Image 1: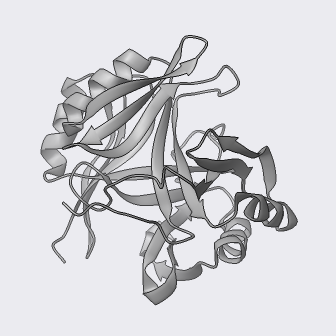
Image 2: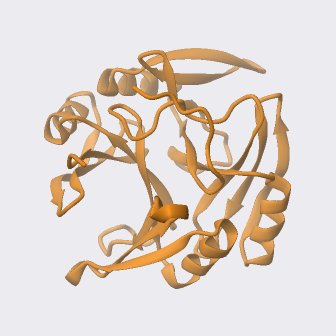
Length: 260
């Protein structure tokens, strides 16, 4: 495994779960991905659970706040300056839901809602850069926006992070947009919200976690109390993926990439 030492601006750097049952979520994910967990006090009886794969951090979870309607995975994007990025997001038509603030010595963050309604976080690194691992088994491998207004979201992210949108025809599945960083490195993806998703579900970012066997992992998720919302399916030239809801209802994807 290669430990990441720094993130380029415009890179998804940290997956974080807000859950209604911290102990239950911890049990589910550690069993599913072989993660270990360590609780850090946050004050007022709250804890922040760091998640590790073979001693390297891959994300975290915490008990969701009352104002968060449902359990969900949060996406963090690395930026050079959180204050400047938040101000730019506002100028581009986004909403700053949480103004930039310091997270102790770890970094500085802000919470943004894009013009299509999806929420994400900006992260300015100090002592904590983000996940130690990416693109390896048990770690974040891709982050994808399901948007109810891709036409509004596309220019917003392109201008905010300097991403280059690359649209691909999926046939009856519509268009899939790959947001590329420098040197054509994929930063994330975007597609129109599937018709089968209930109308009350807003635009949102979803994490994909790398697995060695998509079918076996999906089956294990079901055994552990999760729900397989989309059974394992092949994506040509990409790999095999499935959509899972954990026992508390937070949705994520698993992906076995094709060998590069």
